Amino acid sequence: MSDKIFITEETIDGAESGPLADTTVAVKDNISTEGVRTTCGSRMLEEYVPPYDATVVSRLKEAGATIVGKANMDEFGMGTTTETSHFGPTDNPAAPGHVPGGSSGGSAAAVAAGEADVALGSDTGGSVRCPAAFCGVVGIKPTYGLVSRYGLVAYANSLEQIGPFGRSVEDAARLLDVIAGSDDRDATTRSEGDDSSYADAATGDVDGLQIGVPTELLEGADEGVVETFWDAIADLEAQGAEYHEVSLPSVEHAVEAYYVIAMSEASSNLARFDGVRYGHDADAEGNWNETFAQTREDGFGDEVKRRILLGTYALSAGYHDKYYKKAQDARAWVKQDFDEALDEADVLASPTMPIPPFELGESLDDPLQMYLADANTVPVNLADLPAISVPAGETDGLPVGLQLVGPAFGEERLIRTASALE
Image (cartoon, rainbow, N blue to C red):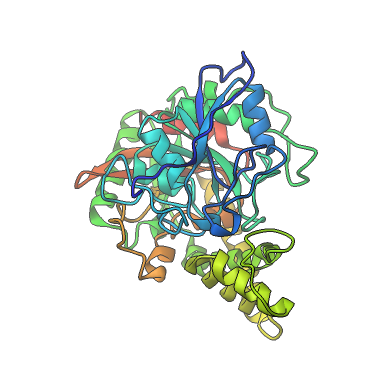
């Protein structure tokens, strides 16, 4: 189905009471749900049923949420359109005939279509913020370590975070309140020791707020997207905020660094899917090398194979220092630039995506176009910072999102600012 939103439509009831009682949630299909298929949008895991819940799913249940289905996604989170899914693409409810963004496109589409009140996605290089922008909903990419990744099928461990979608900033923040917090099963989680509510931060008070606008994140963006972005900044100014331009020179190299790191980590993480330990069994004949190759040929789609090959090459003998080490050096530079810019401003603002939603099928034959579309989102993951995408308006009838970036664990500041645009 071209409009597929859910891969698995099974209702999972939570506790009878709690902060999410009477709230329906869609869960991206790379987040483990006990007894319910978790496919990662791939033939490789088409029949995989986890024997345990991810930490975020356990917290949803404890909060009284009702999980209404597993949402479609780009295969193993690799894509910007939700068209690489083994189960077919998802249409965009806010712009029919266009992609919903990716890789968490099914989650954003479920919220935009009213099929779930809120949803969970995962963001490795913009995979929550891109679909939020393309579908006209709110998406939050938390600070790395704020939300447990236990039970998230790994793509690129050092970059990815689980994040919430909502039709309003407060809805998304309410979901973040439930899933945030340290977890003994994930050593990368950190607790700031603050019991305040993210939802309570959605006050819309931006009086005196200093907004930094990185000039590099406007260069090359669609003219209509830029106009809509500046209209949103003017709206914030009218409410008492002030803006000034800042510079992030390192972002020129961010996309290249991101894809070297992400593909290298993907190559390592996906090595386990050999049809013996995990994954689809091609029932091939021959020695182990032949059956291994046939299993992966049958089980993975083209985009996943492309990223595995490129990641393996970047990590291979003789090329590790040339590519992977340089990418990590660029990552440190990106982090430094963001920290310096945030010393001058409370938040940074840019268009979430430099373009409006692609038409379905438009980018499938041009992977480079798809990679470059992530130019405004991937630097945030490299810097381990929080960001939010909030609807800013439309251009030619297509949704445009505004991205706000804050200091580490500055989610409350982002939520307060984003709510001023609603």
